[in-house]
Structures are given as C-alpha cells and as structure tokens.
Image (tube, rainbow over the protein chains, first blue to last red):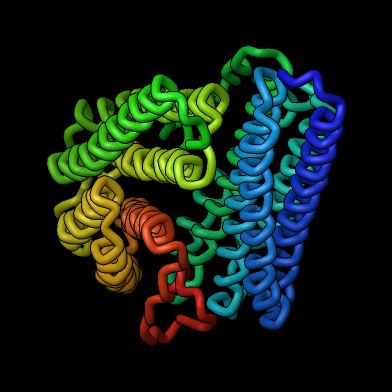
Length: 240
Length: 240
C-alpha cells in the first residue's frame, strides 16, 4: 500500500479480508460440488445431479463478484507491490476454482447418461480418485489461506496419485470396452468423468503453484512425474 | 482515465496499444497451434506435434507478459471506468486464449498415440471440425480488435456447428468402437481430440461474449442450442 492514509489502509484491509472470505466460500462450494456430483453418480440420483448443475451458477456469480471487488479495490485504493500481488493472486485463484466447479458440473451432467453403473467395473475406482482430488482442492485453498508454501508443494506432489488413478482407470476402461462392447457408450462417459477428476487435480496444483510463488517469490520446482509408457514428452498432461 | 495529465494519457495509450498487439499475437499463435496440431495428426508428424507442445511455452510466456503489463498499467496509470474495463477485458481474453493454446497442445500430445488413423473412420471429420473451431477463434479475436458486437454474436451462433460436429463424431466413434474392438484404445484418444476441439469452440464463444459485453454493456442473449436426445438440462456443455 503506497498510501499512508489510515482510512485508506483500513478500507484496503477490509476489502482484502472480504476477498479472502469469498475465495474460501468459492473453494468450499467447489469442493461440495465435487462431492455431490460423485454422490449423484454413485446413487444415480438425477435430482442431486441437477442441483449440482444449477448450483454452478452460484459459483459463477461468486467469481464475478470477486472480479468486481478486486478491480474496484485496485481502482479505488491504488495498492502497490505486495498488496497488488496479493490481489492478483486472489483474482487468479478464484478463476481456477471456478473452473474446478465447472468440472464438477460436467461430471454431474453425465450422471443421467450412466444407467448401468453396476456392470461398469472400472467405475468402482472413481470414488477413491475423487476423494484424493477433492482433498487436493481443500489443501490448496488451505495453503492459500495460511500462505503455506510447504503444504502447496505437498499438494503438487500428491497430484501424482490422481494422475496414477487416471492412468489405471483409462486402461481398465479400455479393457472393459473390448470385453463388453455393449457398454462402450456408457464407458466412454466414464473416461470423460475420470478425465474431469484428473483436471481437477491439475487445477488444485495450479492453485498450489500460485500460492508457492506468492509465498516464496520463485516458481515451485517441477515435480518428477515418473515414467509412463505413453509419457512421450516431458509435460505429462496427456498420459494415456 | 481520470488524469488530465497529457503525459500519463499518452503513456496509457501506449500501454493499451501494446497490450492489444500482444493479444493479437497470442491469438495468432493459438490459431497456428490448432492448425499445426491437426496437420501433425493427419500426417502422423511427431516432430511437428512436439514443436506444438514446445511452442506452447511461448504462449504461456506471452500470457504472463500480458498479465504483468496489465497490472503494471493499472498500478502506474490508475485508470478509471472505461479504461479499466478495457484492461480487464484484455486480461481475461488473453487467459481464455492461453487455454485455447493448451487444448491445441493436448491434441498434439495425442498424435503419437494414434498410429492407425487410416482404420479410424470418424477421424476424417476432425479436419473440418477443426477448421470451423479455428475460424471461431480468429473471428472472436477479430471482433475484439474491432469491438464488433455483431461479429461476436455470430461467433456464438456458429459454435453450434462445432457442437454438432462433436455429437456426430462421438456417435460415429462409439459405433466404430463396437464394430472394431481392436481400435478402441486409439479411438478413445480420438474422442478426447474431438472434445478438445469442442472446448476450443466454447472458449472462442467465451471471448465473443466478453467482446459483446464490453461493446454493449449487457450480456449476449443465450443462443438456442436446439434439441439433442442427451441434452437433459439447459446448458448443453455435455451433450453426448
């Protein structure tokens, strides 16, 4: 803050606290969206799935309000250096969290299309995968709230578990498709759900990287993503 | 701009022109990335695919430079109202365009995994789909450069063509999988490529919506997405 005016400083603190509260809220709602979408999938609960889709509008609105307050704060308080960086981090993180909500919504939208989940073997791995992905989202936001670079680094490392789940589910689903051609249509939706969860893990890692950078002033070291037979180039976003 | 100082006004104009040039550049590079990724896929050109993956770093850097210049401009020039909105639009659009580059990169990464494209019938629809998606990106950025709300609205309408391609390719691929179980693994990558192109169309529409809002001060009317047998809820992001 470049102003010595006490009133402006307090007003800035009020704004930044409100923004942090809103980021916590959008984070909590996105986590809930993942949990509800997965519950809807497991119980084939179309009402719950529909609710996740509708509730995504609340997440979108919240993101818009965070954007508005961020830019209003920049325009009115003219923060410098550290404070500006804090605002930018808040703004960017809320954008990533909004996309996490979109992935949960995408999962919910596929619920009506999966009607024979009992015959879709690999679907049984999804709840565990979703649990890990959801914990990454929670911990990334916790790291942001506490400005905890260590926790942020740990989130990035644990994303490997989500990636490994994805690789397993992808392979198991392809095998399942070959053995059960009648279920291919539904199994394809299963692939997309697993991909959505994998992307949620990636986005939690993005948040963690932003937290790390804000705390340490340098990029998080690249994690060793290990070997994968289909891991042809360094960046392993598409592994199978 | 709230400052009557001529020097500051000129400095602001210089910044905003530089930003607009950078958005044009990131847009052009993303379009090229789509074209090259598709060319690599058609010719199974692994070198070209690898180049697309590597060049994505240039797009990422460009986005970072746009972010930096945007926030530097806000902090140093303290723009108000219209100018601030212009900066926010530039900033948000560059973020969406960077993600379009990511989708192109994701397509390029699957090139090594599709080795028998001649036996994958539905792959023949991808070049046409990609052409429409790529034109949407170009026209959305053209609408931004010209602040042309009519062109923006047209982009949003034409995204329906990309969605229809996606639905066709999804169905044709599932049928192909059922009839040719040996190609299921490769065909699954084809589904993801089609999904990436569909998302590129969505993101071009996002840019168009931002342009429309910036020009008209109101949200673009929702387009009628038509009926689809799997289109259970209003928002048709997941249609098949």
